[in-house]
Length: 128
Image 1 (tube, helix red, strand yellow):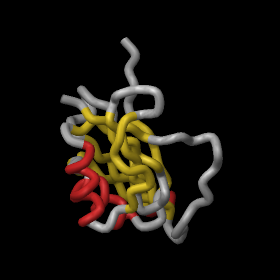
Image 2 (cartoon, rainbow, N blue to C red; image 1 turned 45 degrees about the horizontal axis):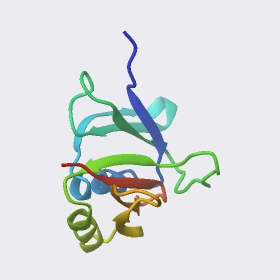
Image 3 (cartoon, one colour; image 1 turned 180 degrees about the vertical axis):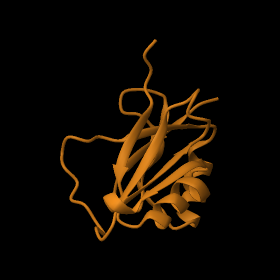
């Protein structure tokens, strides 16, 4: 059976990104692999183990401190119990909220958007 495994994001400061996803979004660091011969480090973060859940792979290429974002990538989505409280906590942690909590256009689902330290957009979707 096929299933979605992970999304890879290239990051400019590995620890800054790990801190954002673990300390602010509440994910766990699942595993880390440093590959000096390839000049990169991978860190996998997620809410559950990789055997049962899709995760985010943070890729740091030695010596690259930022990437230009293209127009094809949209966003990651994270379900949270309370979007407003999550935004308040993220903002207190220094995160940039790019769309304040409120209903989705033409709907009732409560959403918001936050940017990670590298500018990747994350949609927060309220889930009971």
